[in-house]
Structures are given as C-alpha cells and as structure tokens.
Image (cartoon, rainbow, N blue to C red; front, side):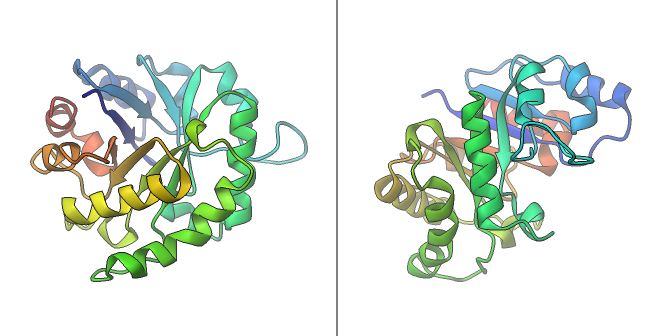
Length: 226
C-alpha cells in the first residue's frame, strides 16, 4: 500500500548548496515522499512534492518574519506541517494552530497537524488520548477531516532514539481515525531505516514524519523503500 512519508529537515542544512545536494540524494520510492526544507530554501529546492515546516495564519499584512500560506502556494508547496511540538514549546497555542490549519485549507494546501505535545513516556492509551483531545478538538472544529493529515509525534520520542512501540502508535492512530474521521494518520518520533517497516505495516498508520534521519541520505532512502 502506498504510504505518505514526510521529511522534516528542521533548521538544516546551513547552505543552499547542501540543501540541494540533500534533495538530490532522495531516491525513488513507491510511497508519496514529501520534502520540507527550511523556508529560506523553498524556492530553490527541486523535489517531486514540496512541503513547508510552518506558516502564519494571515495571508498578508504587518507581520514581520512570517510566511503566508498564499506565498507557500505560489512556491508550489502542497503540504505544510503545523503544531509541531517544537513550535508549541515556543508558546504556540491550540488556537494559533487552528487558525493556521484554516488558512492552509483556504489555499488548497494540506495541513499536517502534529499532536503529541504534553505526552510522557509510559502513559497508557487513555492518558495519551486525553492529552491529544484538546489539540485535536481545537484544530478540527468545523473542518472537513478528510482534508487534514494528522501526525502523532509523542514528544518524548522526538530525537531521543527511543520511539513508541508500533502497537502503541497503531492504537493512537485508530483512536484518531475513529473519533475524528481523519483518513491519514502518520507516526513520527525516532523513525529510522530499521523500524520504519514495522510502523508502516500497521493497518492504521498511513505513513511517517521523519526528522533527523531525513538528513542522512542512506538512512532516509532505507525508510522510503520500506
């Protein structure tokens, strides 16, 4: 089955030449592969499917340093990550995320709504779903869930080398789909070339959001060929 695999380069690499070299290293895949480089490189990265790491909720105006969804659309961006735990840790609220989601939908860009901030290792399914409810309720209110991708990223698994179990990720994905009518749920958090297949083989996990290992060509190509 064709899955959705999104590479989140975060604030890497430091030069355009390195970013272009990294983009060129991405191999072919039977899956849908989206590359999300830093915003400074969006206009000069050539990949089949381009994504963005964030956006603002207004189209234009006196908002220094922000990026409009309309500008992303003009650059050919098809997916945009919102609500990432690293943004929430800087003070981004559920209301801000919800506004970004609506602004993206108005421009025909698919929001990739990240949830999982506030979770802790060892929590059972009930504890996790209670932590996710406010994030999902706010963002998906009065929205067609079929137009949104949700990425479950337990904050404790991001960059730690200690991913959630595939069984846990599957349970949470099933909850999100059943409760909110979402059609595509991704897993993210310490995904690598070894464990990717285990996550992708789950019935309700429709793809992966890959962070640090999307910067390692050999590792990322193992993931997208899983």
